[in-house]
Amino acid sequence: MLKKVVNNAEEAIKDITDGATIMLGGFGLCGIPENSIAALVNKGVKNLTCISNNAGVDDFGIGLMLKTRQVKKMIASYVGENAEFERQLLSGELEVELIPQGTLATRCMAAGYGIPAIYTPAGVGTEVAEGKETREFDGKTYLMEHAFKSDFAIVKAWKGDTHGNLIFRATSRNFNPLMAMAGKITIVEVEELVQPGELDPDMIHTPGIYVNRIFKGVNYEKRIEQVTVTKRG
Amino acid sequence: MLDKFGIAKRIAKELQDGYYVNLGIGIPTLVANYVPQGIEVILQSENGLLGIGPFPFEEDVDADLINAGKQTVTTTNGSSFFDSAMSFGMIRSGRVDLTVLGAMEVADNGDIANWKIPGKMVKGMGGAMDLVASAKNIIVAMQHVNKAGESKLLSNCSLPITGLGCVKKVVTELGVFDVIPEGFKCIEYAPGVSIDYIKEKTIGRLVIADDVKEMSID
Image (cartoon, rainbow over all chains, first blue to last red; front, side, top):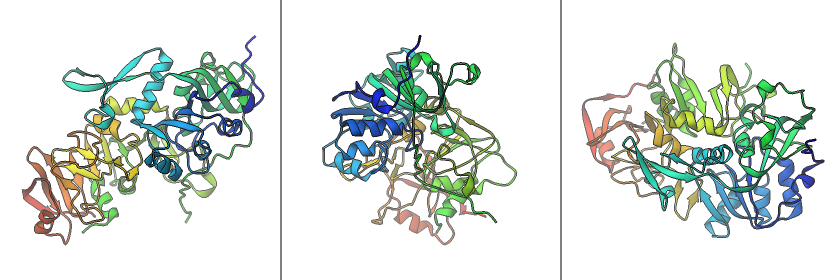
């Protein structure tokens, strides 16, 4: 009997301790594991290394964990929407590794596919390449980038079943299925938790084998960074 | 001299029927508003959407559906969603025909800097390094000079590099410049802008095309 379902975020993250390396899904505030972030803030775990495309905004997403100084190191590709982040970075309080977005995604993918490293052209000749092994293929230079190692991956899906099979919605998919494959322990929060058989196997984005814990999240705010609309008429 | 809308309009003339195009944040995003009549282009958003539609009506705003600039958007007939690894897979494997992005500096050998000002501003490269390392055709949309009035078209980038030798064309409020082995080749000047003024505002090697002409944007 598979026992993946937990009651809530608190239970799902209960063994995340100080110094852990965690991946957090989402692009900007889209598709972030809101419940789990709130639980991490409540738990007060410290010295975390966070791998996530962005660092939230000042008062939402990973920004909440920055405010409480729970993050020792941030690995991300773009952090432009967070003033507190920029302040901690420029003052040296926060260790930051900025890496190209495609490299971030593919290093997650490599972890989930059991491949130790990838070669990418992104960052060749830049600061990103410093200290990294390069290799030429067909006359073009590539950087070797390692698969991520992380203790936990925390992702948000739209629907999931109790076996951990997941379906994501629209652009809230982003890094979530990649990180779901990449954690030593993968924790998933879903908007809708259903019984096995209710999801069409052809529509599954992440097979349940990658998922260790799943719970139904509550009170999603789904904050939008920039509401842009077309006016009628 | 052009405003940012004029720069976007001029870049839109580079679009060809059937192109898959990635538009960066800022002026590049505006290019989508000026796709020429009668041609179809598919816009790629690196957060996982191919086929970006217009902004939604207010009642259709969906927090799960945004572009890479974190703005709410819509899908169109024929759109698809995918994860971030596949998104950059299509970029790195050369499927995207044209990339338009902003820059802080461009060098006359095609180097670009647009992600960091040491000690002052750190936003990160996002997908820019992946895009510039892989795209077949890269157009930079930017102001010709910075806020201090200094040229952004340089001999060498002074800021940390985003990618080497990758920019093919630069469109600024002053003109259109192809990046060729001899430097920036001015092929068009904006209405009301003299060649002398362009020379004064360009630090990198500048070549004026024999058939240089006034830009037409309408």
